[in-house]
Every structure is written in structure tokens, then in C-alpha cells.
Amino acid sequence: MNARTWLMGIDNGGTVTKAALYDTAGREIAVSSVKTEMLFPHPGHTEKNIDDLWAANARVISDVMRKARVAPAEIAGLAVTGHGNGMYLVGADGRPAHDGINSADSRAAACVARWYEDGTYEKILPRTCQSIWAAQPAALLAWFMDHEPETLARTRWIFMCKDYIRYRLTGEACAEVTDYSGLNLMNVRDLCYDLEVLSAFGIAGIREKLPPIRKSGEICGRVSRSAAAETGLLEGTPVAGGLFDITACAIGTGITTPDRLCLIAGSWSINEYISPAPVQDRDLFMTSAYCIPGYWLITEASATSASNLEWMVSELMPADRREAQEKGCSVFDTINAMVESIPPGDSDVLFLPFLYGSSAGPKATAGFLGLHGWHGRAHMLRAVYEGVVFSHKTHVDRLLCHRGRPQAARIAGGAAKSDVWVQMFADVLQFPIELTACEELGAMGAAICAGVGVGLFGSFEEAVERMVRVSRTVEPRKENRQVYCDKYGRYMRHIEALRTAW
Image (tube, rainbow, N blue to C red; front, side):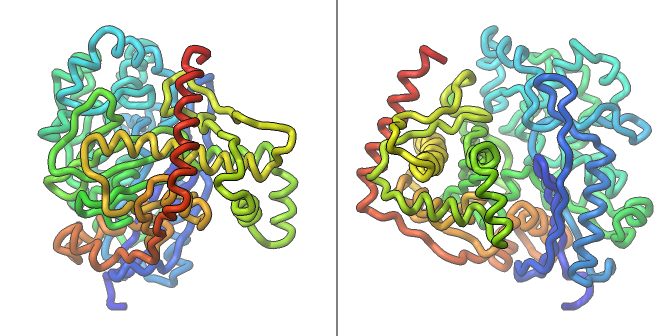
């Protein structure tokens, strides 16, 4: 490989920080990851130590170069993606003004409830084109004004996760547009901060603390001398704007036209497509800017996806996990076999995948329905798989109210590693599911961004054409269509019947 043509993508998820290195053909050369600790100082408060987060980034950056045996001078550029919402407050001295706040934080729930009740949401919706939830900066900033005004007083910059990491890399304060357009702080139509929106939330005083808006593929600084010393990167290496994590996965799977959906089945059920115009609907989760100019990302989402299976394994299958580890295999291989052993029509057990959130209302809870004494764990596991897919379908159906059926959907996240689960997605949704060759799609999306930023690609479309490859397509089985249609109908009827109890 010639000098200065490697691209680095860094991905800061909720609990894991990763760095990956790619060539310009999209081949993944090396990956490094480290877990980051969540802090729960009070009920509903979900935080991270910002210095520890930066240390994790520095560690994976240096480690991935060591693994790949790549010299710092060979890296053409890098970019960062990270979890959306939450917020990272930094003082004028560059030091954290508060611990970082994660996207699962709920301290500001009362603010959100008030804005839905008093008409604020209806007033700002034509400008923001998105729902409001507790972990959005709009709500968090209102909470801080009421409860910790001294924290805001010592804050100079309001960052998102990946924008803070870019700040630590470069010393430059920037707000990348795909991330900040999902915070209820901007007019999503013209992509600028909106004083009328800020005033409606009672937070107009923070306007000067919002960094200047930059594009995803724009160079937003270069690696500083101090960051170079901590990471092993070469001082002066270009750093592009980066991406909101849901945008990174969409471009990482190759979404450049509206004909395909992107499904991310990880901690959250993310379901999205791109549109040449923003979509406004009070029942729609979010419209935000896309990295390709002239497109918006239309998203339906809730915390109802594969994390439900992780809970099941952690709480009900610890012995199975230990046994799999002793055999040198994954417990999920065992689970896939158990799920596949039960044909779709042989079990009426349903699972509502609402352990961490809901697509059915704020007070909905998780549960198994239809269990009998003759059912075993395999029936329950199949129900978990199906319940997760049904929640995705609920979101997809909402998206289809605003567009035609897609040619196919690209899938990412933990569920994409299970052939059984992917087939279930195809059978329930009844359109083809495409898988790409890359596993670290967030990091891939960030690397694509870096390639555009440094001019190795003339556009995001060109970058996708060169870096993203579909490895296989899973076609829906028509013989399962009616079985799943009937099951999904029961799933929705049970949810409707439980609304009064919730």
C-alpha cells in the first residue's frame, strides 16, 4: 500500500470504544476495542467519566496501528462516530465541566412530559421534525438550568460524544451536522441552530455554547501535538467531521439512494431510509440530516432490539455461557440451534421486547405471553427472536407510511451475525435482506467519511462504490409469510389489550 492511503474509523458506542483501519477498497485490516464503564450516580442518571473515555480512544487508536503494523505517516485521515444524544460538557479550560451523559439517561423525563402536555412539541415540530426524549440535549439542558445552573455557567462547549473526541484529537470545537440535527436544537430543514426552538424549550441562553456546524466530510482540524503523543498518530493528520452513529451505519452499509432501508439490530431497533426531503409527522421518531448533501435520514427507533437477548443470556443462561466458553465456542451458536429446532408454526409463545424501552408507549413492559408447561427454553428463545423482529416491523410499517416498499434492506448489528435471525427478518418483512462484508459498520462509516474528507474519494457515493460490498442476500420464504403475519397480528393485539394495565 502506498503511503498515506490507510483510513481510520473510530466508533464510540454506549459501552464499547473501537478503532478500525481500512484500505481504500474497504478491506478491514485490523480492529481494536475496549469496554468503557457506565456510571449510575443517581436513579435515571447514566454517565461516563470523560477522561476515561478519551483514554479508551487513545488506547484503541495506538493498538490498531500496532496490530496492523502501520506507521502513523501511512494514515491519510481519520474520523469518529459515536452514540447520539446525551451530551458532553467542556469548560473554557478544555476540561470536563461534568461527566459525560449517555443516551440512556432519563433524568429529564419530566421536562419532556411537560413539553408534550403544554403544546411546546406541536409548536416546534415543523422546525425540528422529530420527537422529544429525555436524553436529548434540549431536555438535558433544561434540566441543568433547573437543577445545576452552575454546571452550565462553567461550560464553554456543548458536545456530542464523537465531537468531544474530535475536539481532544484536534483542539478545534466543531458541531457535525448529522449528529446535531438530531438533538432538537436545530431547524432540520435549513440545518442551522434555531433560536425560536431554543426559546420554546427555555434554553436560548446556551446558544453561544453550541459549536459551529460543519459537514460530515469536511476536515475539522488536524491531530495536535499533545494528541499525537497520547495516541501515536502523526501530528497534523487530518480529522474529518464524522457521523452520528445511525448515519455511520447507514453509509457503512452502502445506503446512497432511497430504494433501500437500513436496519440496525443492536441495543436499539434502528430502522431508516434516506429521503430528498425532510419528513414531518408527529408519530415519526426522527428526521435528521444525512451525510450526502440533499438527503435527510428518516428514522424509526426504540430500545427494543438484540439487547433483550443479551439480558436473557445473562440472567437465565449463565451455565450455558460458561459451558460454551469451556468448549471454545459462543453461547449464541447454541441459541441459534435451539431457535432453529422450533419451526415457526410450532409455537404460539410471544415475547414483548420492552426491557429497556418500548415502541408501544413509555410505560410498556416486557414479558412472555402464551407460556404453558410443555414449553421449554427453545420456545422462549424463539419468542425473543420473533419479538425483536416484530418490534422492528412496527417501526418499518411506520416508515412505509411515507414511502413505497423498498427493493431490499441492509442489516447491521448483533442480530446480523445470526443466520437464523436474518432469515426471520426476511420472512417477517417479506423483502430481501442484504448483508455487507464488513462487521464494524460504524467504524467503516467513519473511515468512509475520512476518505471523502481527505479527497481520496470525490463523494460519499464514490466511496461506497469502492469500499462497500454486499456479501450475500437472504430472500424471504413465502411459505412462512402467513405464519408470521398471524403471529404479528396476535403480538399487536396483545399490546393493545395491555395498554390499560400499563
